[in-house]
Length: 348
Image (tube, rainbow, N blue to C red; front, top):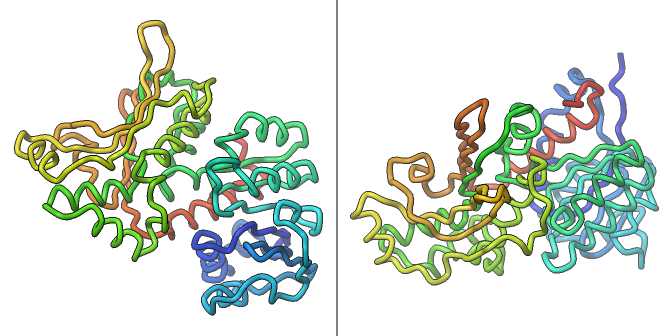
């Protein structure tokens, strides 16, 4: 049987979507055989605008486009003056992969692009957290009302299947606490400080390998970890509040001598995202530097590792950890979500 063609929109051509294209290229035969799909990129957007073509774009062409520092405006089917938020209006597709640069103040352009895609009957896979932070419930309602799916496991800890485990594998369990190290960049910086290094030098190294943005404040000040904790708790159906209800502090003011002192006492200073239930039964969510035992699970999450500890009534404590210094794991998580979305038997 010939593979089924799935027309796809790519919102963003950064590291994650280019990584997804590389996975698509490298594993095309396996995907065509089982589960039996062929993905056709019928529209694509970057900061220069959008391009749409019913015949689709070759993955190699799109990968080379950015490698050669070119833009979407040079592709066939470029639509001058059309904002990326309108891309779903200009392509016949069944799936959008939303990996645009996340604006933490507005959620745009990904938020409006996702809204429109869902309204027009497309499924949406998110690698960009920002739309979910601003409109998690709204987007899920839109998906339900239009008979579509939303997947977003790539938004939390890259390739680590945190969201999938919570939504599928811990069904019926009553979660009692969540603790994690959700930001590998800050974990790497803390290790460098622990070893007597300098924060500025550690940040520059993280930027050099592409793990940290040009402005690393979102990581260093704890907001990236808070966003991931928010999504985890919403995915678990446990949190009714907003992102502003999370108490957040970062690692900006930590000094190397503070980490050395903790180490000498058999502890580690980590940027910990935590959700616990207060005596009144309300969830309290925090992100901030915290001492943990050096031999504990979080204490052994080192450098480019991320990890989460989930305590529940049925499964006691579940631990998940990964090592991710590059965006490949996030791209793979996007592919995982894409395959779950297009496969018929994927409703957990």
